[in-house]
Length: 253
Ligand SMILES: O=C(O)CCC(=O)C(=O)O
Image (cartoon, rainbow, N blue to C red; front, side):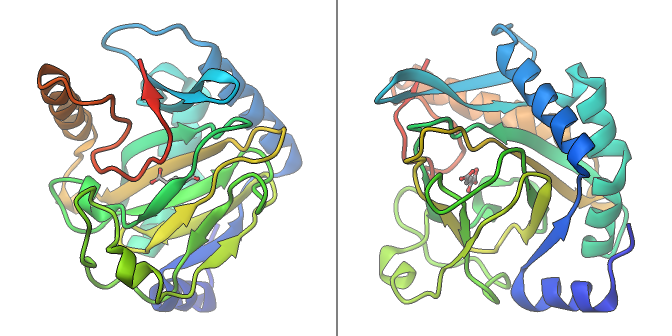
């Protein structure tokens, strides 16, 4: 897929871009893959499952580090069109930095206003996207973004989220997606999302890329994350899903 000059300009000016990525057949296949991954049992040293306590009991909220264990996902996120689009947006050959599935199952929590960059270590610029696995709507907690604010790291609160006094001044745009559509965004694009108040799940894939010339840092990212999580555990701090405190749910082991 070749992005047009208008699409590139849209991304560079606004910090986000909506594109159609998956056909309906591909979307059905990815929905099956996500269900498979969600069914994997916890295994030390492999994929990372995270759970949250919802009104319906503990539920999966996130899985990370799954591409080494799923050839279809590996091909989709590392070898195929996604990396091609990421390369065009970065203006340089892209490599996968990290990947996650956010499940946001019925009753799942939302995310406070934040930029991803403070949680993404080692380099300054990353580009991520949300590939909608299920339709993402206002009711089930679609992403909301702010345009044109991807040039600097904004002042933060103690959780690493955007200072609430600034948040109130921004124009937040709700981005509803059909399953198979993709919202690309810069790691400094402010974003947030509400809880899933519907009876249906709102699953999404989030691959993040960086320019290969800055290094292939995926293993280092997960090593660093596990190190910081282990330190939190040693200090008896609460369970975490992220390197910043953006998740509004109650993470449980
Ligand atoms: O999946 C969502 O609703 C938002 C996720 C998000 O902002 C994040 O994981 O950083």
